[in-house]
Amino acid sequence: MPLPTWSEKDYDHLPGWSRRLSPTNRVMMAFRRHWPYSLAASTSVLALVLGMPSATSAAPLVPPPLSMSAAGDGPGSASSLATDRWSALPPGPLSARTGQAMVWTGQLLLVWGGLANLTNAQGLSAALSDGAAYDPATKTWSPLPSSPLAPRSGAAAIWDGEEAIFWGGQPGDTTTNRYFSDGAAYDPVTGQWHELARSPLPGTSDPTAMWTGREMLVTVGGGTTGAPFEGATYDPASNRWQRLPAVPSVAKLARADVSTFGFAHPTHVTVMPAGVTAAWTGNDLLMWAIYVVSAQGQGPSVSCSPGLCTAMGLVVQALSWTPGPQEWHSLANPQPGLPLLGAGAVWTGREILFIGGTSCIPRSPACPLRPVSYKPVIPTYEPATGAWGSIPGSPALDEYGPVSWALTGQALVGIDGTGHAAALEAGSKTWQKLAVYPFGDLHAATAAWTGTSLIVWGSDGAGPDNGAVLG
Image (cartoon, rainbow, N blue to C red; front, side, top):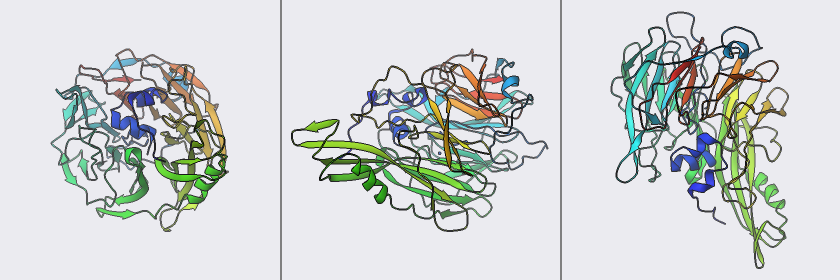
């Protein structure tokens, strides 16, 4: 059975930040992959950046794996952030945009690419290829030199300790389903760009990208085309890519899911990759590949025509991979119904938080198109024990949860599209309300932690947006 057609209203049940992306990216959000928001600084459909602690020396250092340590009262703690206030950034050279890639180097905030907020006569937004660097020490912006990459939005971005690497994305006309599979690296010390070696992965927008300390990990798949899940590593030192092992078959899980439909003789069974959520723990890549399984048959169903019923469900394949061995290992699958589709995965140093996902399949009979309220629950997974848990969403944020977030080392900061902000304390797993962002709409914003302050930049408004700093 083919998957249903999509329309604008199909995304109203998703978190606010996904509803305000371009049409193709909204589908990518619903049937997805590294906002994750990567979150790790991908800019992905999530268009999010998790900030890393600032290097203590003048030279940029390879940042450690993102983590959220025990609670304290220093910079970045929930209690400290609760006393901070917002101040506007100085005017910069970039126009307002969505889908930008953003990364913190330890000294500079780099912003590159995106979609212009103004549309042409055909109603399409132009993709952008300009960028700028913001230096919090001098409170100044400087434009980046021209990039060798074509204009695009939805590129992944990571910092490898010496260079910012940008990969993937899509052009301004998001109706073409055309994606980029190339990338480039920028050295802020020399001001030079260079292209990456050709990637073995297919072109994609909003890939998941993570830095291991030596290589960039990229995972793709799902989205609008239902492309198979794939992954690869990129070594900046050798300028070489290497494919990850092939993802194991999901047939057994799919058969088990179809058995829950209650069909006596299921037919037309299809399995389509929907989205992938991944996280790097410092030693292992953990990945949750999510598929839509559909079937027809005779039996009870929520949607039946005379003599024929149809049903759809989500299947989650949980896997881990350790660099070196060319094989995946299966993990215990999560309980059904967790909001993992389209979620960003955040590694805290002990567990993984899944933020901003859904358990719904757009246009499926069991999924409401316009729920009255969406109060997110954050599923958690602890690799050491295999235990799943959950954290309630912050009551300070709006009904769609955070648009952007950042790890500070002691807390997880979430900001919604209307500017309300809250910090999740590491030790107590409780939220503290932060000062409201006073400078306008944030539905297209990205955030980064500098080690002493939180910088937010980006807007889907028509005018220029210079961002602001909390701290």
